[in-house]
Image (cartoon, rainbow, N blue to C red; front, side):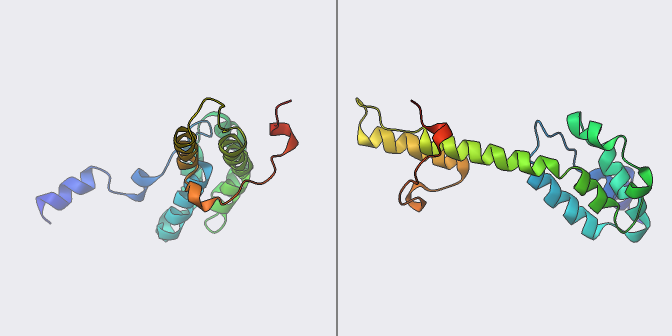
Length: 153
């Protein structure tokens, strides 16, 4: 075995070093779920019973509060442990959807042209708002009627 291979083994090139943390106040839940599902597909069979348990230990904040009292037998299940963990954390997906909707509503319904503002300035502000959403403003041909909660009296 070469010295390079020995060094990489010493640094912990094992799958556990790849596990993502999850803090709902900071992390995007959809990205976390995608990463967990990817790791679940590449996890060696011998490590599967500990995968969900280790992922649960990397939860922070309110997510940790949700999983700390979870039945450990459901987490160490080699076939369904990760699914059980993701099911317990699934409530954060709705929170992410609401944040996206909130950003969209702010960008679309609250970005209006000021009376003393040039058209170019308005288009630039609208472009910045749409860029934050990952949408090109040319992709939104016309604006739908805003929901009543976003119309200021």
